[in-house]
Amino acid sequence: MINTQIAIIGGGPAGLRAALAAAQTGAKVLLLDNSDHLGGQLIKQTHMFFGSQQQFAGSRGIDIATRLATELRQFENVQIMLETTVLGIYEDGVLLAEQDDKVRKIKAERIIVAIGASERMLAFPNNDLPGVYGAGAAQTLMNVHGVRPGHRVLMVGAGNIGLIVTYQMLQAGVQVVGIVEAAPTIGGYLVHAAKVRRAGVPIYTSHTVKEAYGDGAVEGAIIWQLDEKWAPIPGTEQDLAIDVICLAVGLSPLSDLLWQAGCQMTYVPQLGGSVAVRNSLLCTTNQQIYIAGDVAGVEEASSAMVEGQVAGLGAALSLGLGGEQAHAMLADARGQLAALRSGPVGEKIRAGLSLVEKGVTADA
Amino acid sequence: MLKSTGIPTKEDLQKIYPSAERLAKGPVAIIECFQRIPCNPCATACTRGAILPFQDINNQPQLDAEQCTGCALCVASCPGLAVFVVDMTYSEQEALIKLPYEYLPLPRVNTTVKALNRAGEVVGQGTVIRVQTPPAFDRTAVIHLAVAKTVAHEVRNIVVEDEANDA
Ligand SMILES: Cc1cc2nc3c(=O)[nH]c(=O)nc-3n(C[C@H](O)[C@H](O)[C@H](O)COP(=O)(O)OP(=O)(O)OC[C@H]3O[C@@H](n4cnc5c(N)ncnc54)[C@H](O)[C@@H]3O)c2cc1C
Image (tube, rainbow over all chains, first blue to last red; front, side, top):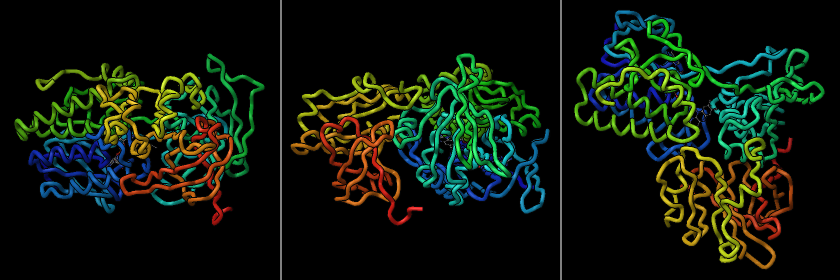
């Protein structure tokens, strides 16, 4: 049995910042991640990030990951276990984790779940042909492993992920024949859209995939237009010769561990799926368990980092650690979150949070 | 419409474009940022205070065109690659455009490249005058491109023929 004060599951931006904040209060911290590197989604994000200086805006995701991981490794009270998958959280606060084909038991006083989200699938005929990828998977292939996913790509979804992965494909020398988007307008930031548009990639709004075809692998796709009621319009079909279809149709929080731990869960479409009910310090209905980042609601790395800070400080304070300084940092972090979410693009998140944020604590 | 095509319209551009008088005075930043998003590195990067400090991080950048020297620090720092510099005083016939560029290979100085508009269509050609890649620009190159004055307000991208790797 490994004993620790605060166990953090997931070493993405949320988990890294949670670990740093908790470590600064002197807590004994254990950070677990199932991959072989720290950084989560950040390690494939070669583009510059939005936000403000406090969330390293203007820096590239990959560099933010390195920076946070390097900072964290300075702390003697932090232990990092990579290639370790957490399988379950039990009533007595024991985590079961798998590393090197061995199951390990971890006892923690507080647990912060920061495991992120998973990509959604889209239903259309032949979506099981080789050549149909999640956008995140294609991004991992290119930016982590240096492998091009194919030659001619159809991107599905004009949210930020679809737009950014399109851009990174162009950078990798892959041709993107177009982006289809079912909604009548582009969901991602318009600056990202303008960037791929001026590189010659058409954006087909009010369009979707009718079907993919190919003998043993994707050789093409038929797209068609949607009317105002999102019903396909026969006769508008276009046949595109491509070898890759990339799906960027949204993410869903990875909720399994939280369900299993008995946290009260709610389905909130604005946050991407089932998420845990939490208080303003990101503590779930299980007093021992905190959440941060995409698992708490699919959002952005900038807000994931700040949520990590809130959860890390909240967990430490609940153990009597951190004192005045932690309270001050907490107030600052919450101010940053409010600012990040205050604009029109934060509207959906604000609506979603109003449904799951219950029980305001004394720090609110 | 920008929201359905990704291409800013004339009306969008009118809202942010510096005045003809200001353009006639020399290089100035053109900030093609048309949406309220939480982002402010352009203002942080500007050493002259020409991009006014943000009251709210979701605001769109406000340029004090009189303070702007067209130095292009904001061009390299904008995460959306949405800032350009246009110098209508470059020469009799030509304007100089400074644009952000993150593809390889980088263009070589003194070569001619195809010049693209905001829809990715070829609208002419340009001469690469300078390629700036200082460490402070963090891998976003700023390309100085001379183009005919007639297309200076259209050209926003280039195509570099990749001789070594034309597969
Ligand atoms: C293509 C793309 C582009 C993006 N661009 C931007 C951008 O420009 N700006 C921005 O702010 N955001 C961006 N985002 C969003 C951002 O990446 C995410 O919001 C952010 O990474 C969420 O952080 P997180 O720590 O919650 O999760 P993640 O980064 O997903 O990290 C979760 C970690 O948990 C680990 N894990 C999962 N399950 C387990 C388990 N059972 N046991 C142990 N470890 C586990 C995972 O391996 C991973 O390392 C982008 C996302 C994508 C996909």
